[in-house]
Image 1: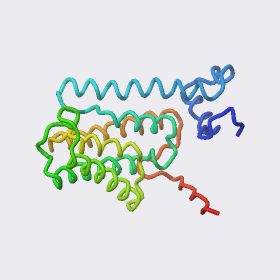
Image 2: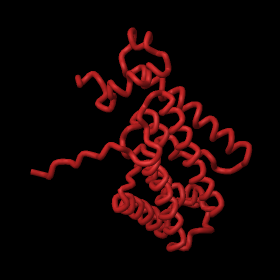
Image 3: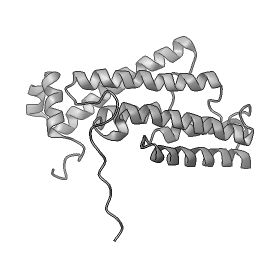
Image 4: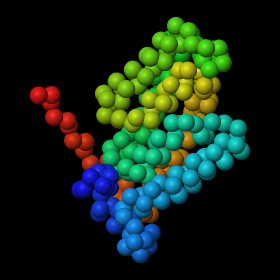
Length: 207
């Protein structure tokens, strides 16, 4: 694929997308990049707006920062393992558990957010421990999902700490994942119902 195109743009996926969405005429006038950009814009807007509306109605954190990068993976690199439902749900669950576990270990579960009172040694250790543990466990469980690193910091920095809200966070991830399954499959993308069929290619060992 030429350098002018994004390496993640699979022509077969794009053809399925435009065929299902009846954008064939647009494809005749525009390159693949704008098609994916439009797909990302429309579906990113719809999915996050729905969760934000739910958050407004219930006054609970159904929308939070790390959903943004998750939505980006869902609608721009949907066939990669990191964007699969399995990696997404397990990755955020690991992030939630590690974030709250770090709070408990440092005795910060009832402390105000770091942005309000500043960062002390306990908060530094909680943040560092939560992120390190999240990354390690995602590797061990083969559930890499980079946005989960943001989820664990949201918790370990004290932004969201109420246990019931932590459950809401995972429910929000589940709802976003279900939307991604419906949208990507309707678009003709071979998006998995659980685990990705594409295995990551291991990097070459250092020479």
